[in-house]
Image (cartoon, rainbow, N blue to C red; front, side, top):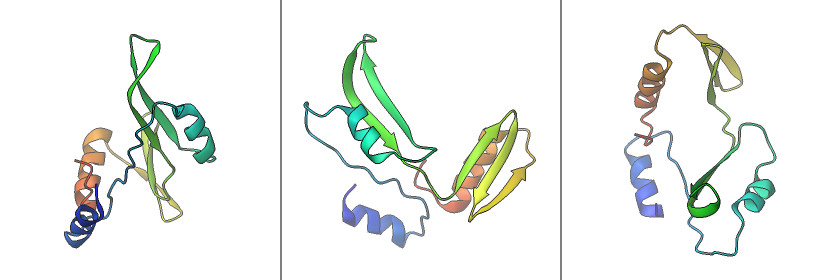
Length: 108
């Protein structure tokens, strides 16, 4: 995503816009990068592997957010602006989809 595309999302009222960086190098170990930038809880590394042993094409590193949603033992919690709210729902996935729509998240 370039700056123009990002600003276009902002102009449309989107509140959640993923930002990414593409690195073109075969000499960079994704785990080393992850260890250097993920010094907090709720970060993650997703790596595509070919044949179970070989690094593949994509690595996704997610860093913590101030606001997040947790599902613990069937209970859904919304952590937002330093406040935690337990959400009463029988369908956590549907609730999260509706939450993203209400935020005008570009994560569709």
